[in-house]
Image (cartoon, rainbow, N blue to C red; front, top):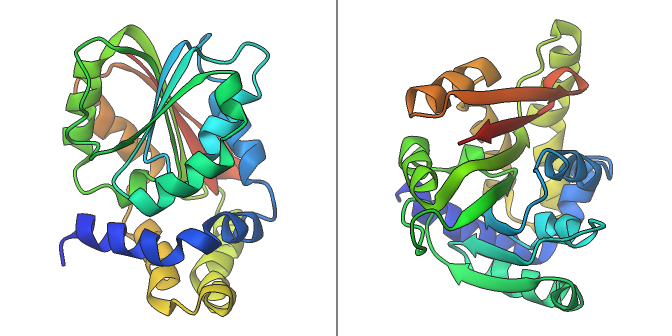
Length: 230
């Protein structure tokens, strides 16, 4: 099964447990980390939320003192977007929301449409990061700011040793107790093992035409926020 189809099926299988498990795995810190990522945006008005899932990044956007005029939640999985729509029911009073089932490699919007892009905990799941970056270069205005949050590789050896023990050994055990989907949360640590380290990912982004790019480690790199300005 191609990675895209596998990811789509997996998130359908765990959609109902997804938010609860995010809070458990992160010790209830994931929404705080999302707020840090959103703070990197510069007065966002028209935001593309890639791999939007159940809508947590859009929730944080709705909490801003001056929320965006428009947020497009894009995901390949209808089950996740249905949960997002229910969750964000009240947020529609503060900003215009659109729910789009599509792939990050084929974003169904005109050139130079968005001034901001967000993504939470999904970079590792993408099949072709350069193809996504090419699309973002097309649909984003000059000066657009993108902020991507994801699990990463700690740059402290001591923290790395503790984090990898937790993430590779313990997370699959107790998360499958909640879902009964062993394969899904075996995938989670496996996806990090196969994913680029922070500096490697920065190089990939720069090699694909974005020179203004940086990253910020959280807790020495158990998570990282990648900030790109077009």
